Image (cartoon, rainbow, N blue to C red; front, side, top):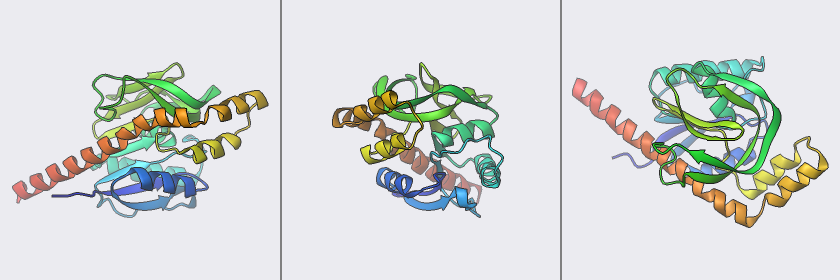
Length: 237
């Protein structure tokens, strides 16, 4: 029986170290990382699952690495490979699947409250209202055809599912070091910047740790999907 699935980590950060540390800590899987902004994409689909991380890029930018990433992701989705999209990954998967991504008039940043759908497999075991760290200036304005929303707040859609694709707008993988680093990199009014920094504390971080359950839920789904695919292949033989 498979214990550790093979998962591709599609790292969209231009400075990849924080993503690398955070996702390797949270995902109980054998990870193979690709640094997307360098044009590094997989050459195979022989994997059990894939995770698309956050990035300071926008999915509608006209950049070669974004187009090549979309092409690989689309082909992988067509092969029924399970996906988890986080922030930029959430938006990229929405775009690939036919949804609409657009810039926001105001960024959402800091520890925020999100409400989940009662029937969400990805968010199972998490309170219906939960705390997450968010930082984004784009949003999924329209879900892909056939997708259903699994999380939302007053800024809009915070996650969806379509078939084997799961996404969240927030950053459940962040530690406080990453949250502070990303916040300080933003061009925010001084008062708002300080307010967000003041909220990066032990209490909010501990509350946000509940959402890390989604990583376990995703890897469990990947294991079950891989096992079912293997059984189906054996039956066909």
